Each structure stands twice: as structure tokens, then as C-alpha cells.
Image (cartoon, rainbow, N blue to C red; front, side, top):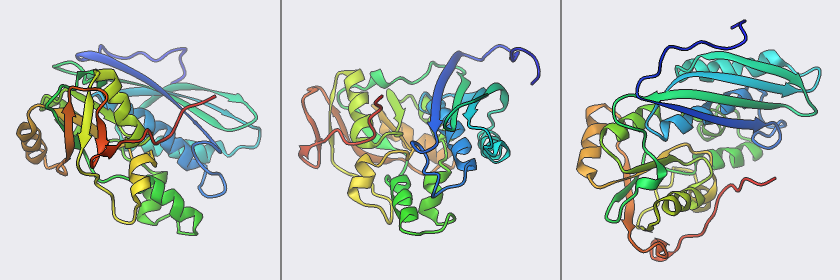
Length: 277
């Protein structure tokens, strides 16, 4: 901190770079959550992009835009919490005035050894896994609107998401063919993976977290669980077991025909967060 640019040692393997922007009132309701949660979510969502590639974080830079009078100390506490919990040091950034609060985070990471896992590698016959039950973040927002306290477990899942870094590394080391994080919802994100891989899918199981609805599990978004495909499901399960991680859940199969995209024999809707201007 303090120089015109950060100086980093050489990266191991491939270098990863990703950027996310979190805006108060869009990505966090200011009447329901403290400002520090915006800072936390901005960093956590950016780091999750590295987890989705099977990478590990090296550093991040953060740019904050805010109106005069904004409690920047509170915002920075959330940023620092996420940086510490994900082992992703903040090595620089910028601050400027704006009409609303926004936090732009650029993360840098690396994938030592074999290359990064892409969305485009899914193959017909692959088994599809997710790293955990879905819907907790959307259910947490619903419960907060209904009056649940900030320490309610589902509310915490919304305000303090956890990037699946260890799971992403384990999946890469187990040789998965494709992977991404579920930031916008399974109902749209897995269509994106299938589009990139030019395949279809048959989902036979939807893991819904306790206290969540099916709609929240499909299209709620911000779960940040990982979805992955592999031709060696036993190898994947063995790797997770060996590393003491929660076992991933098989939810279906990849098929060759891109027009076949079903959930429990019904067409799978493109349901989830749409990025629009």
C-alpha cells in the first residue's frame, strides 16, 4: 500500500483475474443490512470466481465510490473480513465520490499444476455435481424481509456468503471437466455452462436447503456453491472425502443433444438473476 501499483511475485501456473461490482440498493438492501455486508459480499463474490476455476487467491484491489458522509470505516470492515477469511490480501485500490455506494473488486489468483477448469469442458456422459444444497441466500433475504434477525442462519447465508475455494481446488485436482459458481442461480447458470460446452443435460435431483423453496433453489442466486461435471465421479467423491470436505451431491447427467435440458423430466427454465443495464 502507498505506491502507484502493487508488486507481486510471479504466479504459479496460470494467472487468474476477475472483477465484480457490488452496488448498494442492487446487491444489498440498505434498509435490511449493515453497510459492511456490501464490502464483504463484493470481495467474497469476486473470490468465488477464482474458486469456480479451481484456483486460489493471491491478491485483490478494491475501488470504492460513495457519497459524502458514507461510513467508510464500516464498509472497509466488511472488505477486511472477507479478505482475511479467504486469505486474499487487499494490495491497493481507489476511492472517489459518487451518488450511490459501489464497490469494485478485482481479484488475482493462480492455478498451480494443471490448468484452470473452464465452463466449456463438459462432455456427454459426465455426472453433474453441486457442492451443497441450494436456495439459502434467497431464503435468507426473504426471511430478513419478514423480520428475521441478522444472525438467523439463512440470513447469514445471504449477507456473508462463503466462496468454495477448498472445494474448487479439490475438484480441479480430481480432474473435473467443467465447473462454475452458482452466483445467479442454477436455473440460469447451468444453462450457461451447457451453452459454453455445446451440450444438454438431464437433472434428476434438486438439492433444496432446509427452510428454502424450490423456486429459491432454482433461481434465487447468490448461493456460491460450485456446479461441476466429471467423467470420474468416484474419483471426485474420493478426493472430497480424503480432504475432509462436505461430499458433493450428484444431480444429473450431461447429454449430447443441446436441445435436451430437463429437470425431473420437465424443461428446465432459464430462471435466475439477469445482468441488465
